Image 1: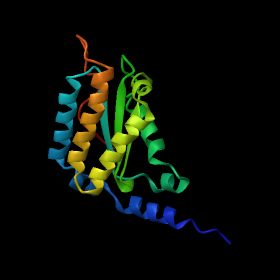
Image 2: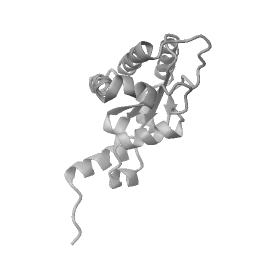
Image 3: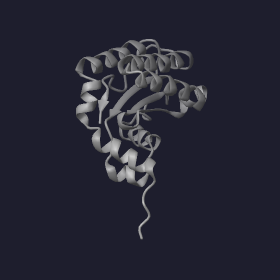
Length: 172
């Protein structure tokens, strides 16, 4: 007899099955993505760090079945988008997995050593509370601002700082 998957896995599979790009576009229409892009651009004028924002509706069901966590996926995205490849090792990825209502922040080693996991987790928790309350875009913009405050404190803007990563959010 085959063992049944735990109820939590079945619920997660169902959430990922029913969450599609339509859900993502309704919660983050073009105007919302433009607002996030503007927030990143404005924020990056105050520091030399790089912020990348990525949104994903859901994972493929095979990845959910294998137990891939939002954190594991965020690490993949961090590498794929080359957020790690900044001059001062101060790139930061804010990753939202809509089906799980999960926010993950992955920071390059240069800035992570100064802020630490607890600092990033506090921002993630605040953003997740905003998403749960239905204030997705406001929570995203506030999260960008909080990340930017850390970058401004630890990676101040220098002359000739280039914008190494696109400001526009990536919809995966």
